[in-house]
Amino acid sequence: MSDLPSTIHPDILPRLDPEYTVFHNIHLAHRMPPHTIPWHPDTRKAPYIPGDLPVMTVGAVKDISLQNCNIRAFIPLLQKGGWTLGSINTLNSFISRQCKDSNCISVALDYRLAPENPYSAVVEDTVGALKFIYYNGKAEFNANVNKIAIGGSSSSGNLAVIACIKLLIVPVTDNTASVTDERYPSWKECQNTVWLCEGRMMWFLNMYLPDPATWTEPDNSPIFASDALLAKVPPAFVSVCELDILRNEGLAYGKKLKLLGVKVEAKVYPGAPHQILGMDAALKVGKQQADDTIKAVGDAFKAA
Image 1 (cartoon, rainbow, N blue to C red):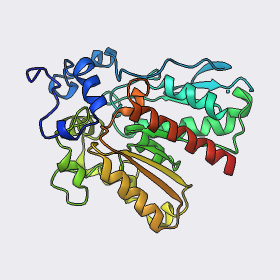
Image 2: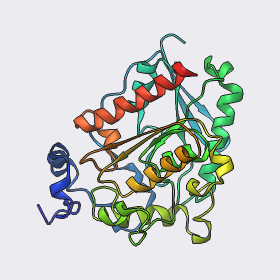
Image 3: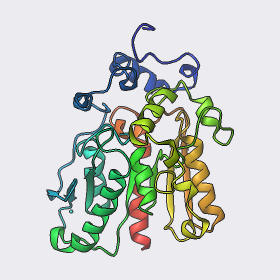
């Protein structure tokens, strides 16, 4: 199997969750990594992450077009990747489950993607969608706009941090990180990991942030935001994976918030690579991450 384009690297294989290894070899090893081929928008048409649960039936689903992007609201019965790939359908399974299990309106954002729309288009879309929900959520889908939690996975986790909301699943918090960066050992340790290896992460970075001068801007790398600003953010749930290149920067961001007095819960999923949230039907560890994330939202709403 070593001749397949996404073969697991030998320095990662012994440390991977065995269940993931079997799934990867069957469903992912044959895929061509997008960062190794010339870019074309049709790349987005390929299936993204296999192994998720079916989309759950909820009270209603409502799509709304905003000025530059779209949102999809999953509404309960009682009322409701990497800046470059993915779509409004990517995590419909998880979002519909969040809606049903937490009995809350859950909204997916279809933001503009790089490289056609590099920084700062996606930041503008994220903030614009949040404002729309706050000012129009009551009229559009009978939302309690005084209780809003925003979260995301990977690049969307980065955007959730920037929007000052705190449900952070394998987030990007420092776009200056590299394999030579001693602050984040996971970059070197996991440079050959599955799915989000160093090459793929740098490909995403250069698609979204072609100008390195912007990499330290707080709305790209929220770990560089001022202490005064970070001390005011809401409590956070930080979820990272042991074999994810982003592991240490997510934990470092959580530690920084804690030192500033923000309540933070952080959890590391052993043997897991970056993308397990979308594999909750195939992997026990993926389901555990999804369960923990949904519980964190439910607990936050109960406490608010």
